[in-house]
Amino acid sequence: MLHFETAGESHGECLVATLTGLPAGVPVSVAAVNRELWRRQQGYGRGGRMKIEADTAEIVAGVRHSRTIGAPIAMIIRNRDWANWTEVLPVEAAADSEEKKKALTRPRPGHADLAGGIKYDLHDARYILERASARETAARVALGALAKQYLREFGIEVLSHVIQTGTARLERPVEWAEIAELAARDEITLGSVDAEAEARMRAVVDEAYRTGDTVGGVFEVRAHGVPVGLGSHIAWDRRLDGRLAQAILSIQAVKGVEIGEAEEAAAAFGSKVQDTIHYDKPAREFRRGANKAGGLEGGITNGQEIVVRGLLKPISTLRKPLESVDLETREPALAAYERSDVAVVPAAGVVGEAMVALVVAQAMVEKFGGDSLTEVRRNYDGYIKQVREY
Ligand SMILES: Cc1cc2nc3c(=O)[nH]c(=O)nc-3n(C[C@H](O)[C@H](O)[C@H](O)COP(=O)(O)O)c2cc1C
Image 1 (cartoon, protein in one colour):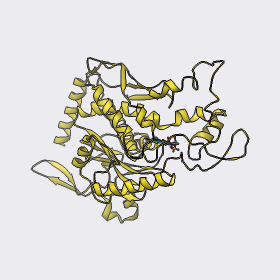
Image 2 (image 1 turned 90 degrees about the horizontal axis):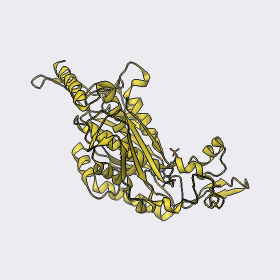
Image 3 (image 1 turned 180 degrees about the vertical axis):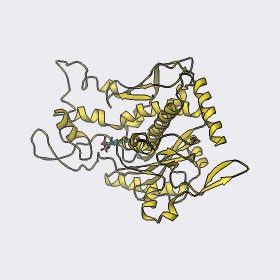
Image 4 (image 1 turned 180 degrees about the horizontal axis):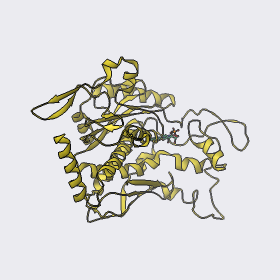
């Protein structure tokens, strides 16, 4: 089965990512991984850190001559800022350690600082925030880039766009071709396919900048070209909708998830929300009247695009900090402020793509198995033939 893990602290030496279970023979382009890392770093509203961190991945295991060899893949993404943190976060205790210098003792509401400090019995929230930080998502994006390269072999593409930033929302349907065009651009501001909506989103972010505040929003991830039959209705933990929801909710600051038009459906009559079934006899294919279910019925992909949305809360670190308590004195104090982002919806969307790509790739590996790409392709083609003949 496809299994992945990340390690690394926000200001540590590097992030580490491992992926086990990809078959041998999958083409891997480091440039494609780096392109995804670049996309995660973009966006209007990002903090200063994005300017010093030009992320690049080094693949140190599992890929030879640009193809997977079936062995676990290991990647490293170095933190460019590490040079400034070697004294603050040394691996081994040092007599002249400066560890106290950057101690964080005024926990930020909305962060893992306080709950994590209590749980791990650490009185400097630095050790909590270093891992809770969304810096970790760079490793997930690198892993997702590998999953995307595997999926591409079967004509599956995963991309995202931004639907909402603060109160500014795009209210019209969006075509796959528009999202593909957006992803190919060399400039990413607020991640909307629509210039007018993007201008409204920019005004909201500008207001947050002016007032020392932050904003959240909604991103949408789509998986295009997914075959019918991934995931299963037979057990709760095999339902692909549930697995996608967990993957999206695991992204830092994502507080809600929507599959298809869930919110609209909750307020409508049943006759208006289901995707009617039709059959095209000459093409010998089932067709649907719409895709309000977001490509999933009974936890199984139905052959339509997968549509998953992540609802992102505003960033918790505020330039105008909220009320907190000093962990040392227990006196009221304003929460700590550290250079921080103001709005991150497009970047969160790129992380969402990575998570969706990894979950869909997991479901593909479960369904089609195979130790080599040749074997997977044979299994996949046989299944597609069976579906056509159904
Ligand atoms: C791409 C991305 C960038 C983020 N950047 C920041 C940031 O600069 N400052 C911050 O306080 N939180 C940032 N966050 C959110 C926090 O990591 C997150 O709110 C925190 O770890 C607490 O977890 P929770 O909000 O999921 O409960 C970011 C999230 C994402 C997805």
